[in-house]
Length: 204
Image (cartoon, rainbow, N blue to C red; front, side, top):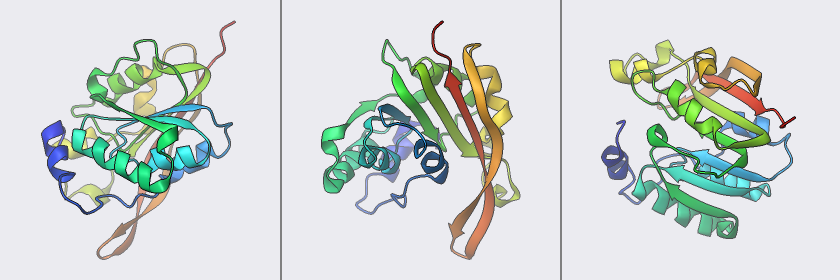
């Protein structure tokens, strides 16, 4: 499940795979920011992209799944925000900003294998404009995920695990695990979101 073909297969059907609701940590952070430009890496079906656009942001949704991006574009059209978004097919593990910069760069529940999220975080920092913010959220290791494969569990991380990926000109604002309620077939269960929020300092 760490490669594009598996996600293209997931997104090949007609049914919505995710809820479409924005992730709670994104809402908590972005609601306190002045809307500007944003990049959401690992955007999937576009729920966070669409929410940001609805809040007045100009947003780029990035994902390595062509089917996911096509589905996200349809959802943006349906939500009436297509004029505020664009799409970028890219693998986060090979992400390069190439001169692009954004006021907010986010990634939610993207889990690179073999501890690769430190390198992904480092790559994402290159896209953060001076004074801009980076928000990376993922599943913290938890007993709730014991049914997953060892590879999936190894890809999970604590917020502080990502700190080596931040350059010296970033200030850490939040590096903690935050409780979140997951909806499962047997009812709601509690899990933790590893949440890293950092700000790039303005050039002196």
